[in-house]
Amino acid sequence: MTFSENNWFRGKNFSFPLGKKTYVMGILNVTPDSFSDGGKFFSYENALSHAQQMEAAGADIIDVGAWSTRPGSVRITVEEEIERLSCLPALCDRLSVPVSVDTFNVKTAAYALDCGAAIINDVSGKYNPAMAELVRANGCGYIVMHAPLAEAGTDMVYPNGVCADIDAFFTQMLEQLTAAGIDAAQICLDPGFGFSKNTQDNLDILQHLDTLKRDGVCLLSAPSRKRFLGDVAGIKEADKRDVATAAAGVISIQKGADMIRVHDVAGCMQAVRTADAIYRR
Image 1 (tube, rainbow, N blue to C red):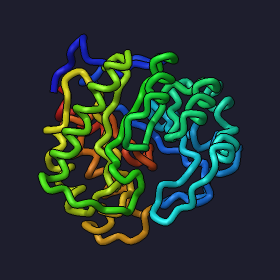
Image 2 (image 1 turned 90 degrees about the horizontal axis):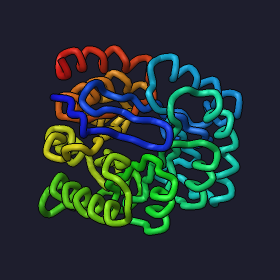
Image 3 (image 1 turned 30 degrees about the horizontal axis):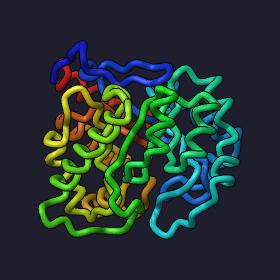
Image 4 (image 1 turned 30 degrees about the vertical axis):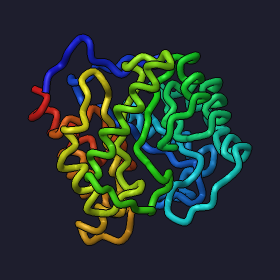
């Protein structure tokens, strides 16, 4: 795994050279019903404190989500989503690392960018011209995720294999986004572990993640505490899957991921630094 001066993930106020290290995105759920830590960081004070703890532990990005994508979760209004993100101005002001916001609503994304967020993590699984124009106009980072049904816990059948479907989606999204005036360095690709995929699909993605890597484009792996890890490790409780998450993270790094998204930043850093010492020497 090598570093090239032409390979970056860039946004409003950050520039991450790809290949030098693995970047860690810490998950901050400001929701009452997320699948593994619902309600723990719902309050303003708890959200800010946890974000600062993750930064101190080594997180390169804090990813804030205001609505749950767990199976059976209730969709909330855009207004409620924005209300839950009331901590954003303080987060962006007090943290020295970029803040990402996990949403598919253009209005929410615009609010987040106005608050100082540097990255939009779009979990819609679709190309949205209005979102693309917002990203272009703001010069922010943009994460696009493969999620054909845009909902966790809903499986699909992939006649040509899940990786072929993801590969085609990545190609199409890159073509559409760059045609809309977004630089490839602003884009990060996420294969969408757990979204419209069963356990075997997720294992296939992890095994063949290297086939989805594009030169000069950031690749994110986000299997943290997902159900498929519980299936293979025999652990029902989501918040007890951090060892399995660390193992999946190391495999992701070996397979070319530039970034991993995790709930337990402190616990994952040892695995990340050890993998980097081996695969990014």
